[in-house]
Image 1 (cartoon, rainbow over the protein chains, first blue to last red):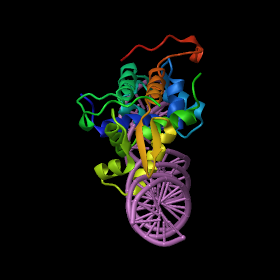
Image 2: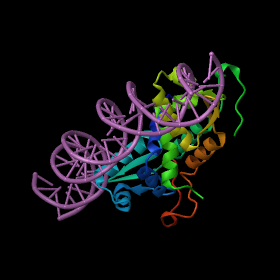
Image 3: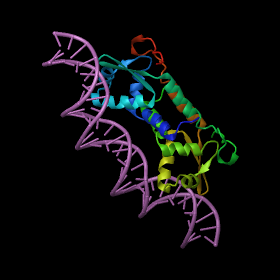
Image 4: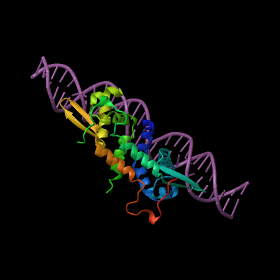
Length: 106
Length: 106
DNA sequence: TCCTCACATCCAAAAAATTAGATATGTATA
DNA sequence: TATACATATCTAATTTTTTGGATGTGAGGA
């Protein structure tokens, strides 16, 4: 079953920001702590926290507390889920719009 | 090669809005004219035009003029491209962050 | 040509997202 | 316990996005 438009918007909104896309790029293949990301991006700590919350709430990023530090990493299954949402955009699952033929590409 | 963060943000931003997600849902499998979408969504014509421009500029939707009407449809290759962008979020292509091992899921 | 229709664009107001300093919370260390 | 540190949350200001009426454009039809 497809999630609600609210849930989808939450996920894609997390991806719709240049800073957050850079953060995801920094998390490729490796876990990183907040201060590390903050230094690389040269943004205030409160701003980093704001963006990390959006990324975590979307399910695209995991967070893990270790003592004083918070480590972030890519949530692979969250990313696959999001990719799947886009892949199904062109597909008709239940039979919409009065059984018209599917559109051809260009 | 990966597109710029600006280009990625443009694409995901198009998907990050409830109205635009509903529009994409309406275009599943069939082409629709602007007035048709406007009536279904119950929004002013200028607002619909605004959202359709964002969707077209992102490459997710095609537009076709036929006389007085403009028909919109899903751009399948645009959607596949966008899905691919998400799929590659967890993958390391060039070897980033000092050769650390890739993170495991959860 | 004049008129109407479908749609795009313009513009100012409203709403939402982002920023960054201040403050709060939780953890380790002395 | 007192302190320092890392991060989360709060808050107001700023920026960006969205809205919707007004206007412009281009395509038919009379």
